[in-house]
Image (cartoon, rainbow, N blue to C red):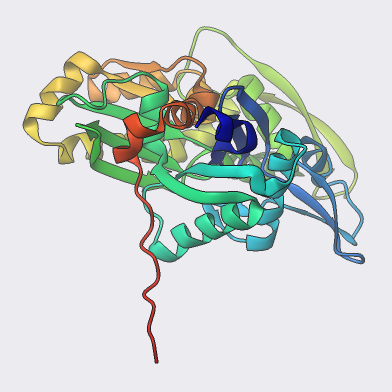
Length: 347
């Protein structure tokens, strides 16, 4: 088996709406880049993938298309998703892409069989010999070292780019789960809409993302934050710069944050009483990029009366869980759930 490991590699792939991460057995996290592709429409040539492609967002001529092939955790452009996986795997291995024996991918909870099959096919076409799927919250809980194999409640809230996955996990399985299409991308849309309405200024997604990171918060805190935002004035059509405060961003995000908090409360209400009691001892754990929003753990704790904390290194929590499965596949095999294979009909 050790000899085979020299020729064949096993990988864990966290194919996220905003960022994709790849864990290679024996080496750790080897890729952490945006899930973005730039393509020349004239030549059908892939120009850039990952960081280089993201820098082109909103800055390309008409014949260059910058694509984010996943929307709300679902593949919207199969070919581009396949190219992303292939490109990232080629960076990992200089040999043929087909040297990858097993690929373990994290997916949102609510995918249909067709959507799950498209993820599996994209990974196989991208270079993985055999593909296994695992629910993102389960992988995140494993990466956060929560006691998911014990008969106790582990409540994890994974706020990614396209979706927020909320799951109560016990005995290695999901007891209650909810998936919202409200996460980092929706936060950016909220900020763009608020600044358009309030300041009559048109800004792009990268600018909204920057404002969210620098001054965004879920509830008031002692520090007053401000950021200069540049965009196009709607009335004159000319460039203009405004000063945006943390209170503005908080107002913009209020509705989306409330929907996440309400969904966490609903998940707790749907949980069996014994496991609900366990939550008071275990607490609620946040991961994903959205978990870094200032004041969000405190807000959820205030609304649910359950201690809430952010896991260590929340951005890599899911891929760390995948890494544990990759490194000790037989120990965690029961956590994987492959999509059903299509029925073969002989005519």
